[in-house]
Image (tube, rainbow, N blue to C red; front, side, top):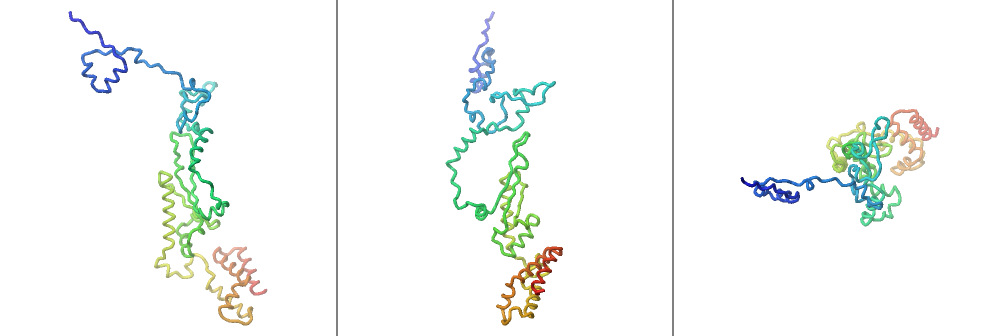
Length: 315
């Protein structure tokens, strides 16, 4: 009778080495491989929390944002619906603790380390920018965005990509024509009371893309407002967006009335005209007429116009 060779007893490490090299078929084709049980069954070690010292560097445990790991957090946390009036489930295998964002990577020690690492790259605040007015003068563009933390499968909130850009039109280099055209182009995005233009972008999936798009829109609006189309030269006084006092029938009429009243005495020419227009009561009359034309007839506007006429005519 032929004697059979006993099954080859190899270690788990040697088997893995042979399989990775790819020549296991040639070496063990005619052999029956038996792996000893102590090499295959790996017993789970004790949790990290049991071996963690009291002075553990927590920034090494959670260096960045990561889901909750029960074997790494030495806290008796419980979360979830209590079963049969008992206590909430413990942290091991608790999906309620895993699916929500946490701030375990933003401990005071971690924030201090980040600040120390960023300190060499920071400079002192400019001494010339000691007031908000100076900051607005040198940095007129303000960009606003919002970061969200919410209970969901993703850390990225859909509204976090929205960018809001604000700038005062007075800080832009615009003449009267360019300013009026800019206001016409932006429509309701411009607030007349605060003189602030607001551009909100949310079309792109990323915040940086929306910021670039907002800056692009501001650049296009600025250059388009300076363009003068051919049809703009044919505009009449009735087509103007706002009432203009200069060279208007109201201005000519008040000058004619004051000259007939001989308010300035002797004198003729441009000097007399400038003197009459510079009078305080004439300026009040100008403001009242401009308000009445632009804002429409209201009780306060009519009262202001009435008082201005009485002062001009010395009534």
